[in-house]
Length: 125
Length: 106
Image (cartoon, rainbow over all chains, first blue to last red; front, side):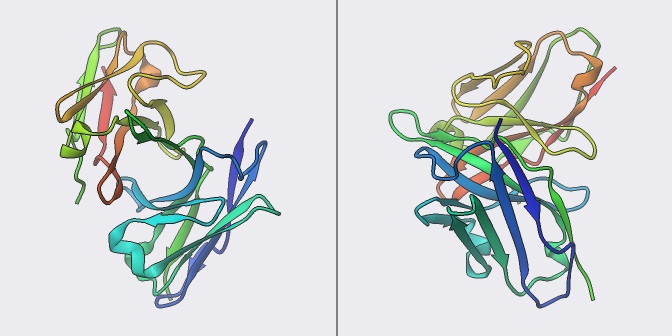
């Protein structure tokens, strides 16, 4: 059974860089049909997709976050990572890593499954 | 702000049928996926594609789409279905979520 687990600091100072890693177990991050993504949820609010990456390194980002986000993949460790620079209090929330399968063709769609348990990141001095 | 619009709250009597809707231009081109989130837990996928249920999701959950509207229908709602429900779809900017619908089972 595929499982994802986030890891990283729970507290980040304003203007610094948030760094999280997702470890994938029970399957390979090098799957042909799967992207791997990050989604966040501010306290008491809804879900926001941040970005997704393919094992080859191909990425796509939410436009409003594009300038601050970097995703990377380490296939040898079956991990992928998120870096978010110049954080502010607005970046506080639970960060989830997800498998992000993509279907292209006559019907193009994608979905997120499974999700990691999530990790709370607080931006505060 | 979300480009997918959901009603903030919906209620249903125990055992009855409820439809949760999601509106947005991207739904004319892409299928929606739906997620159930209970307090303190990570979201769980319940519907994806045309009307696909992941393993372990009861068949009382179903999805449909027409024009710019996607719908999640729960037939015979149970107390355990009380949760927040989010729709999602691919869009021209990447991916978008609806603002979520809080489902109350009375």
